[in-house]
Image (cartoon, rainbow over the protein chains, first blue to last red):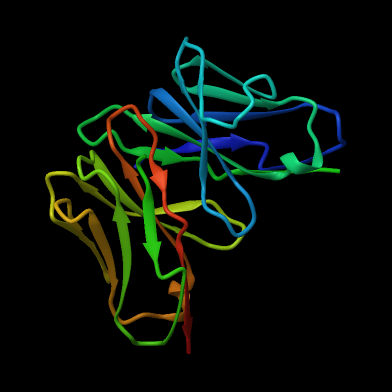
Length: 116
Length: 112
C-alpha cells in the first residue's frame, strides 16, 4: 500500500476563524488528490478534485471561496476552511491517487473539525 | 448521474454467521470498485479492490465479487466475529483520475 498523512488530526476553532488542513502522500507522488467531507452517521461526500499545479474542481454545492484548496506539489495538498461556522464542523478526509496499473486511491486518517 | 447504493443500511447477526453485503451502481462502465471498513470516529481501512476486468478478490474471510453487467458487487464475510462490527463502505471509480464515489454504507453488528 501507500501512506497518506493529515495534519492536524483534530482541531477546535472559534466561529469566524480560518483553519488549514494539510494532506501529504508520504511514499508516492499523487498527481490527483481528492477532498471529502463526512457528517455524523453519513457517508463520504466528495468536495473537490485537485491536480498538481492546477485549480481545484469543486463539486456542486461546495463553495470554492470558502474551501480553498492548494495542490502545490505532488506530495502536498492543503484545504483551508475560511471564516468557519458551526455548520462546517465535520470530518474531513483527503485521498491521493497513485498513478499505476490500478490507480488506487489511498486515504488519510481524517481531520475532525469542530467550530464553536 | 453516477450513484452507488448499499443495502441493507444496517445488519445484526450472531457470531459465526456468514453474511453478504450488497452494493449496486449506475453506469456499468466502471474503472474499479473498492470495499472499505470504517470504525466509529475513525478513518477508512481498505479491504478489497476489484479492477473492472476482475470478477472477484479474496482476503482472508472476505470475498468481494463484481458483476458489471448487472451493476452489482457483493462482500461476503465468512464466520463473522464481534470484531467485524463496523460500517462497510462500497466505492466506485468510473475513470482514472476521478474520485471514488461512495455508497451510504452498511453498519454491521456482530453479537457474541
